Amino acid sequence: MSELQKLRDAFRSALDLPADAPVDDLRYQDNEKWDSLAHMSLVAAIEDEFSVMIDTDDVINMSSFTEAVRILGKYGVDVK
Amino acid sequence: MSVFTLSQAAKEEVLLKELAGLTAHHRANCEPYDRILSASGFTEAASIADLPWLPVRLFKTLELKSIPDDEVFKTLTSSGTTGDVSRIYLDKAAAAEQQRRLAATVQTVLGPKRLPMILVDTRAMLKDRTSFSARGAGVLGMSTFGRDHVWALDMEGEVDLTALRGFLEKHGDRPFLIFGFTFLVWLHLYEVALRHGLDLSNGILIHSGGWKKLIDQAVSPDEFRARLASVGLTKVHNYYGMVEQIGTIFLEGPSGGSLYCPDFADVVVRDPQTWAELPPGKPGLLEVISTLPTSYPGHVLLTEDLGVVHGIDDGDWPGKRFSVLGRLPRAEARGCSDTYREAA
Image 1 (cartoon, each protein chain N blue to C red):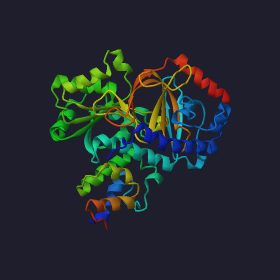
Image 2 (cartoon, one colour):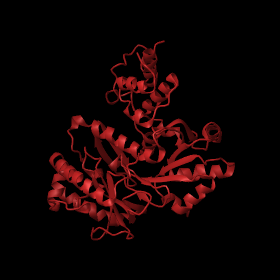
Image 3 (cartoon, helix red, strand yellow):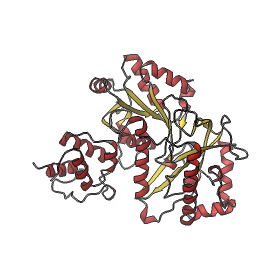
Image 4 (cartoon, rainbow over the protein chains, first blue to last red):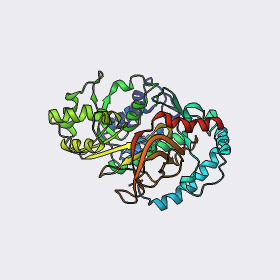
């Protein structure tokens, strides 16, 4: 599975979305399922999936799917 | 990285300008606030202590916001002891900013990495995810600073010794974070650690929630600290904050005994009869000041808590250091908000 696919799946499972739901345009403040509790599940899912440990500032800044891609880049994960 | 850097003089210069700007902003965008200030005859502040304050109780009776209805992103509520509820309105910018500033404050003592974390609470707190209690929201907010979270209490509120032992086995040899309400930490973590010989010496404890219940059990803040040290827990930071100034917390310094104001916040202690500012050493009503409230006029709030400034620029961190001494008896607090209610 591609890194992109893995990240999409992590979002879907943490936010409790259907397996084919489009997630690439998701933003934290616009999606009601993406609340603070789901955010912590999402971070945990991403950390597990990519074997990284994300710093506090990056957890807070991870406010969209696009941001998640950018932040993972900092940890050496090239999502595409 | 620290947000406790400014000497009192430097802070007052920076803050006065920002807070005067916020006062003008809220007057222009929040009509009841403007009416209150007009009625009080306020024109200009020459110092932080001159800035017009609102009694915190007013957020329970008035809708105070400086943003249009369609920009309200989050409405926070707090239930007071009287059953009245404060309503605090945040737009997206204010919601993001308060989280960033809280993180910056806490990272002063935790560093940038998320540490393995013990939550001294129960998951039952978060059962209804559409409406958390203030306690649930506090726990959830803090959980951002940790990872591999473990709940110290099970769904019934009993200590989950197996979970705690498992956590300490896995993470106990490196720094980890403990968060909880003061009384729960005392009752459920300290006593259990003592009885079962749990090693908490790598823990950093952040706790809040008032001392009343502990003082009822004759446990002073000093004794709390000393007893925790006896189970190895020496990095202990109490904090004081309220939903009406969300994102701003006053954090206890490493040597204990005093709360400190982050660079974007300050406190003033006032005589409850004359409202005059009191010097260090004199207890009075605590006023909390912060530049974070941009979407509602909560930047200068008179609390119903008694406090005392211990010193200025003479502690672990620069600025004022202070303690919260407890609630002002209700009858005395009522007078001040009644005055404001008439004006509003």
